Amino acid sequence: MFENPVVVFIEVIVALVVGVAVGLWLGIRRHRQQTELRLREVELQARELEQQKSTLTQQMEAQAKDIVLKARDEAIRIRDEAEAEAVRRLADLNREDQRLAKRREDLDRKLEQNDQRRTQLDKRQSTLDKREGEINKLQEKRLAELQRVAAMTQEEARALLVSEVEKDARGDMARTIRQIEEEARAEGDRRARNIIALAIQRVASEHVSEITVSVVPLPADEMKGRIIGRNGRNIRAFEQAAGVDVIVDDTPEAVTISSFDPIRREVAKRALAKLVVDGRIHPAHIEKLVSDAQKEVEAIIREAGEQAGFEAGVPGLHPEIQRLLGRLKFRTSYGQNQHAHAIETALLAGAIAAELGADVALAKAGGLLHDIGKALDHEVEGTHAAIGAEYAKRYGVNAKVVNAIAAHHHEAEQQTVEAVIVEAADAISGARPGARRESLDQYIKRVKGLEEIANSFQGVEQSFALQAGREIRVIVEPNRVDDLAALQLSKNIARKIEETMTYPGQIRVTVIRETRATDFAK
Image (cartoon, rainbow, N blue to C red):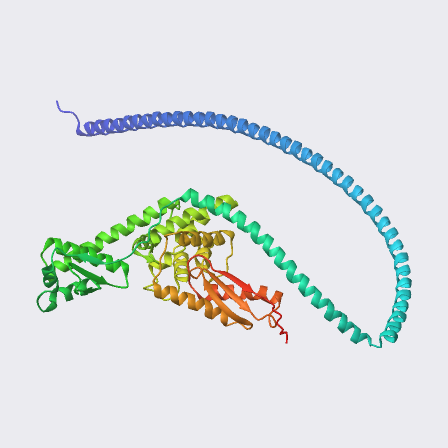
């Protein structure tokens, strides 16, 4: 009934061996299938790589062909250009060769002509040398004969001849110089009158002498006490804040403000007028109104500077230069407002420059800025021309305009015709009727100064200042000053007046030389 255990064990072993064999076979078969799949994938990838390689090879071959073709075309183009350049240069060289050959022929011909001329000149020189020798011998014989006849040596005769010729020549020279100067002066005066008349006609501005008086009217004399304040505290506070002197005197219903600075004087005048109208006069309110007046005057200065540049036709000025121009609104010279004078000088200079064909813009700029130093001459040492030129140069003004500013009173050399035009326009603006006034003391001092300058020269007998100091007549001693020296004396006196004096317009210098012969009948 029961099987043999050994047989069962053997069957189990056999079954296990068969199972293992079957498993191994199945595993090997699966591995072989996977290997075959991987081989197929590798083969497919190899075929794709081969195809890509073939495609890339074809593309590279095509690009290489294109590069070769382009390089061949570029080489052909460069060769053609090089051949054309070579042909052009060859043609240039042929033309240059022909020109040099022609010049060589011309030089050879000129050398031959020079050789012929040199030969002729040598012949003429030898002839002239012979004639010179003959003339020298004749001259020696003639001098010896003259010395024998005149009983004078050659040096004595030469000195006498030179003396006589010098006298005649000096007289002729003086007459000729006087005639030429009179003709030039007449022609110059005629042309100058035409140009100046035309310039003045174009400008045609009215002139009224401006009197700068800083007088503040008061509604009543009792206001003076309020301005002074208790123990003078109000007037001291006002003078300290405004930097001026307030003069309260017996003038009815008026207070005078004194200051060397016109800007401070204007600020003080406006502030005091507001205080009088407001009625509240105490130190704190005084400081506020003075500060407000300063701002108001600064605004007026800026506006006046811009207005001056606009009216004169000089754009692009530096803001600081415009501010200095605006300060001239409160500056006067001999009663003439310098702001209006600067604008008028610019217009006159522009008109004259246009007539003479000079630079109109440069002349206008020089005329507008020529007196800009007067806005600072009470703060900076020096003449207003030098101060104005320095500040203009500092703020980038054209060098030619700077020269016109510095030279309009001959303190520097005038380098351009526009500088001369600016000087003339300044003189025209200042010399017009009603433009300026001067005090009696200044007038007497100027007239005496003119006569003292003329009397300082040797040979002057008398001098007289005429026509309100616009002409000086100088009488000289005829035995000490001849005609030529009289001419030079007038120039020297005029030059010294220009260097040492300040005056409006121009001064005419007339030197009179008169010879009188006196005898007595007995």
